[in-house]
Amino acid sequence: GRKGVDVENKMRILRLIENMTMGRNAVGYLTESMHGAGSPQAQRIQIARQMQLGYKKQLAKDLAKVQEEGDETLENSDYFKRVFKLDNSNE
Image 1 (spheres, rainbow, N blue to C red):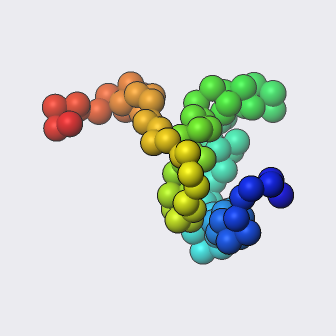
Image 2: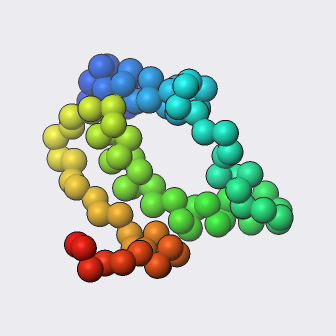
Image 3: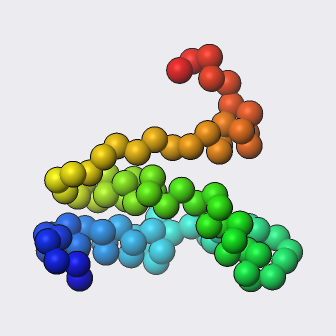
């Protein structure tokens, strides 16, 4: 693993991944299967465009209760607001 990362934090992230992929909280449909037709490379490109990796890493740390110095709060992009036309008047 990466130097400077607490062993407990590593285990928390591994348990979160296990729970989300094989455990009782695993999703029935993977992102790849929701993409539809097209080549596997087109799927990877589309997923990479919309995945907001930094934000999701921070969410995973929050869910696993991983505490690291220097973590900054990342904001979700407006992707979901644009796609689902969410009302912003309540914010």
